[in-house]
Length: 483
Image (cartoon, rainbow, N blue to C red; front, side):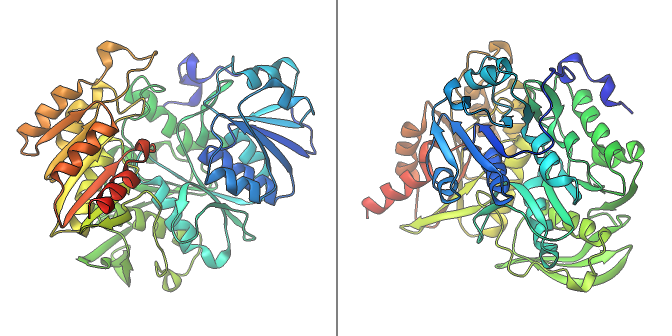
């Protein structure tokens, strides 16, 4: 087992900062329109804090959401924004030490905290912290757990928008606060993983596979972060034993360990699994005994595992088994989200970007729409997805799609050419696996090719962790205009 103290220096360097006052009143957020920071701003405002902030891009829906909460937002960064002397400056992890506002806060001696430190300080001191972590599935699993705990009115913060509610956070009045635990670093002055700040009484780990290769130089480093997290949990650690890397975390735990998965030996498992048009039906079993039947309105083996994980943690928290239900759960935005349909062509949006997520999403789409031809459209834009280390995995991820259209990844100033993805070679390898693949320099050229090849009854699955230049809406508009 590796402790956090054994991390490389780059993961431990902590900058001295003035301590925030015991009583906070005015809080300023740098990068306030990001999904996480905007959600934190909303939580702070609902809790009675005076909140302001700035961002380089101020646009709906986050800008209008913050305006409705009476949160002042500046577009663009300026040291003058801090002249009023906030009690605390929250610094997003995208900020470098030379960022104009981050530098001004430091030079003026203003108290600074990272996003996860602020969340922990302001919301986790007097709540029971439940943290969902893992390489894949943590957003959906977090939202499923929130749904299962709904009668207890938990507080929560999740890294996406819950469909049907259009929220990513809530104060709640119950004893629990549910947090999606990210393993990315916290801030330029705190290179610890975010989830190390969340003080988990109970936690769940869904999966573990090398990711964020701009932060973690090897799987050993990545594993060490999760081992340190597992050692933090005080009461219950829920592990997916379908993942050998995850179940190995048991040796790092001081909390009681419970397992879930599709193995007969899992503490929580599923039997009688079948796929219907409305979702996945299964029987929940606990220690080998059937408990009750469920309809999960999601598709794919990965989502069945996500549901089992959420059930496991809810049961561990004392929720009676007979009250567990996924009735009314509508999923997460950008997870196999149907954006629209024109001319019999279904356009679907998904956040998938890691090769494992791309593979699982394509398989789930085929389960959900088994009679439709599936066209997979992919934008590799993250620091991880653009690297050569994942080329072989991406080559296999598109199996099952009828066609793959890929936008060439941007080469950025800090990219190493030797480690950069050869997207043309990737397309050739995908094609050799019986899924014809093409590469395009950008979304406009890709859209033109897509309009030339789509047919009635196709599903176009568009995968990116960014906006993809609004490709979903542009495709629907072009189809509508061509009718």
